Image (cartoon, rainbow, N blue to C red):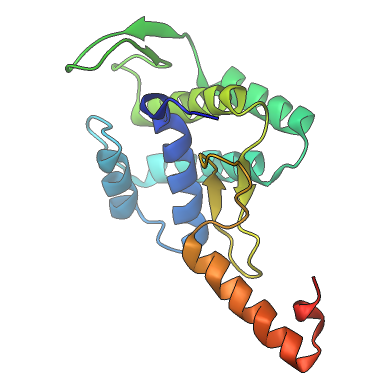
Length: 181
């Protein structure tokens, strides 16, 4: 499956927010830096924005953790209902035609909600309902959007996949359940 990586910003922001929250680096300044890195204009994050984005990010995590297409679609529909006022096609800043889910005059929180809800909906549509997940390594809370060719990704990173493989290998030598496949 080939993904249009130009349309991936919403799912990538959702992924980054969830991983920041779960990784313990969640604070106003880091949150502003993350959003600036994803090209949000004026990403000024105060205590109010931080609290609202934290609540939203907890809801975003649910989308990655669900296994059923039906559950995932229902959850994203609820996010779309709260986060997206209107959708429109636009061109700007040398970019080709693309969708916007919020007005530039909307608040930062409204723009984050709209982009992540819309981005997740687009990604789920392109991925035929799947390809979002949580890392399979025990103890790793990270999430991911699988854009690999085969679509069989189980880990957030090669590092986690390798660590899990080493743990399984070492467990086999000791007769531990972790070594049984």
